[in-house]
Length: 232
Length: 232
DNA sequence: CGCGCGCTTCGGCCACGGCCGTAGCATCGG
DNA sequence: CCGATGCTACGGCCGTGGCCGAAGCGCGCG
Image: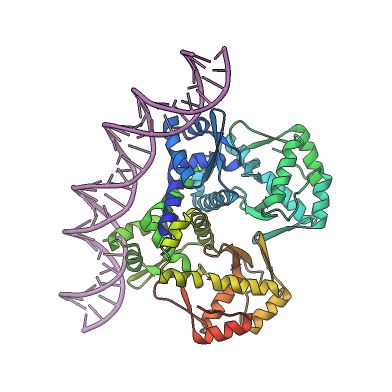
């Protein structure tokens, strides 16, 4: 068989708890230092260093040196998508009882809004997608998605400029939300919408997690633009 | 963090070489017995039994008892898609030198034509997809796919009945071919096309692998239907 | 220029988990 | 009803790999 071993090695690399939490921390698309990653994984820097070296030589991570810091990030969007698919399956499999047991305040924020590599996820992202579907601004099916002309205009009106389709990357695709179990918007369109929300000050990141908070101004703007209510 | 541990556990489950080769063997969608899986993984039945039990309780596999045999299969298409995404990334990462080194006769057959869970993959599947795209029978982009009316008619002409969109499963989606690095047709449409090729006797499975062989009749029929040449 | 900080390398400890041999439990055939 | 077959449960062996402490670079800053 061709490359069964490479397949197992990749999965084993992800399967270690410490490495898994570092990869999870990088899912928001930012680049973090070894020390930051060590802290989130609950291990010492020297142990983290070894893990990061293995992940980098395996090609899952990329590293850029900047002064005496070394920033680690996911190597490609394909890696992020792979991690997302594993998360999706494992979330599906987790026993419901246990899932309810660990819902804390931080989890509440995560469920409401978070980043998923470079786009938005959580209740708010699914709600946005729903409204755009209802208005015929996007065609979002589990097996594919497409932005309509109306959708392009709507985003322009929000001050969100979507890069041209010609660029190499995937333009618009659905991404299964693991907390809502319904699709939200990913791809270049999802990334542009996410960037727009941050640059307008509608959303801001919460400390060192993937969760994001809705600012007061953001709440007004988003409720008006998407014609919806955000209560919690 | 919500369920980081479940995430790592799932990946670790896939990361063991023996379990990885068993999961790979099940990627063609068939259900196999513990003994067959043990043989392909190169371990004893009692060891395989333990692995299968863990995979089943984790929800990655499903088991059906039939007399004194127990058939194991992938639990859901989502699991297959997750495995496929890991394969795709790990194939990308494998060093090119090594990849060329292990190309044998069996690999040649695998590269030409194989099953990918429930649809076709390999050079032949990519060629089929290319022809259908060129004729406007399918719209196949990396981020989504759709069958046109012309495509539906073409498949009907081949005696391939595609189940209605209303059914719960994904209708038509692209799947990145790991040997060709280009998309082929997956989803309900891909599965129907694959079933049709088998039921017409155009393709048949090769021993215990995912590879499939083109029968003489199949070669004639496929070359005519898709207006292409199959030389090897 | 030399201290300090971030990161890596090395060596040794320890435990988790895969593997098999043996033995026990179901199901089918004679 | 007894033997054969497919599978599973238990116990012990052993190797792989994660972890940390201590020590060694490399870069920036004072």
